[in-house]
Length: 296
Image (cartoon, rainbow, N blue to C red; front, side, top):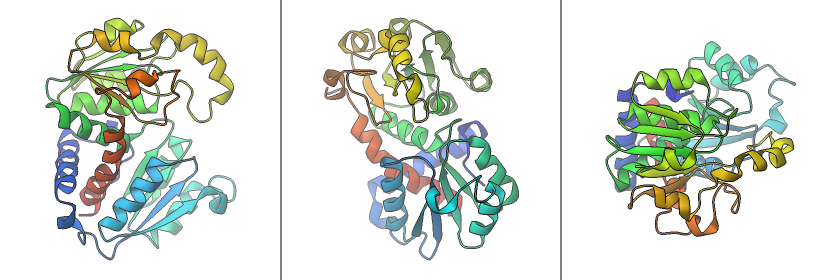
């Protein structure tokens, strides 16, 4: 079993990972040798802070030996094909986590290997982030019946958040500028599990929300579009006015890194409603849960 996408994850598997995440966070000592003797690879084609450190520490705290692999040494897709990289690493590792630009590289490796493969971020989805996000929401209120509002770019984080929210029993409203909507196939699939609303009005999306979520307007690889996107996304900034349109006890969420003063103001980032550091911490516990679920 791999974790390439929340789209391919059943509600039961998602629920199990959330339960494991809460358990290892509550009693980390009980799992200190749970996966002793295993080895995993953590492959990074893209820059990383939270993913790298949280995954490395999570593995060590479960008794696993992690090996960090940088693309400068590997040359994925140039020096070697993704399939060859995957088949070689399978001879050394019990599990491989990969942070890549192209989701199809993950698909190519998963197709020819038996070891579990974990998507640590691709252009399609960010499933590990979604598990941490739902852990964070569940610490605030039950996910079932919760309404999440996502403002900004319909990107990989948005895709995983949509799917995870509805598969866990919540609903989600997504507001993007015209032309920046999430992939229709993701929205259609999510609609089979729960309520997904799309629109271009951020205030309308936030009305009745228990959590307000945003992400950077220009992701890695989109730097040349940054100025254009700032103009298109200007009215989607999460500020005090936007938060006031949500439920009175609504929380603010962001996967980080944040461009303060663009998609979110300092005032919201530092407010009592902000859960961004809880999300960052829960990346550690979520990855432990993923490892236990796939290797346990």
